[in-house]
Amino acid sequence: MNSLQTITNHYLEFCQYQKRLDRKTLKAYRIDLNQFSAQIPANEISSITAEALEKFIATLHLNYKPKTVRRKIASVKAFFHYLEYKDIIDVNPFNKIQIRFREPVILPKTIPLHTMEALLAAMYGQYRSAECCRQKRNILRDIAVIELLFATGIRISELCSLKTSSINLSEKTILIYGKGAKERRIQLGNDDVVGILQKYSREYKKEIESIGYFFVNHFNRPLSDQAVRRMINKYTSLTAIDLHITPHMFRHTFATCLLENDVDIRYIQEMLGHSSINITEIYTHVALSKQRDILTTRHPRKNFHL
Image (cartoon, rainbow, N blue to C red; front, side, top):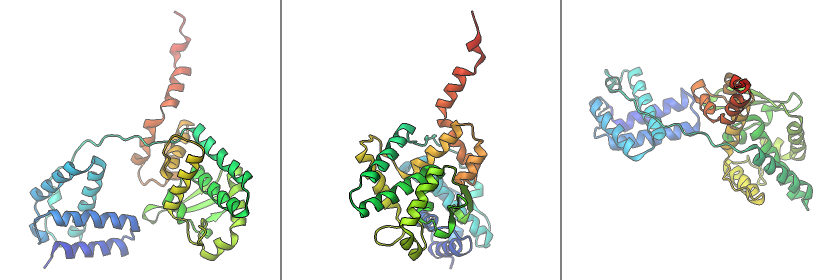
């Protein structure tokens, strides 16, 4: 009997072992498909109709924001493609419905450059004035984390899972394993950033070699994303920065700054590890200051004498 729950479990195993999806993606799929199973009044896969899918989608719109609805629909749609691929269903009910809805553009939040500079200046000040070795070591690691986030636009998950073998400070390169097990290599272009990473690497050499991860905590374990969030909150509070800064905002700031400095968007796409240029294009909406500068200084109207 092709029960919905049984087939769902088989599909998640397929995603894990055949498609090699990462842990967070698998978790999202599991949540979305369990929700789908709970709301669809059918036990047999073959009895799920286009009408049932439309009712499910309507329920999603009542309870979630458009971006979340789109993700949940994508999860279920991928599941039904699997059912077709495995010949579990003869007709895919998704082929009989049209899914089109306007998703509002939510501009990514960035960190103003004067705020970014103030944050780093405060951290370096704390490092220089630290009264004990342990405090100095902790601040050194924190600076290395923030500098790398800003210098590369790396995701917080990628930073925390960065292996010792993936970072080559003599060649100034980092090998990053991103979403979908895709690799990308990023150059470290600033000597001050390389210098602080080298200093951190020497100071934490024993711990790094012990666990094989580049960033470690005081329990000799890989640094967690929660620890990085707490660290950022700590320094923004110390600096009296009136802005809630998240790790992902460093990524947004990295991309926006490059775009405003005339870097081709396809280079930015590659550095961020985006699978589609459509994802990267969100940053074109936030380059208003650059647009204002262009239209103020380069538009021919400024040379008119009337």
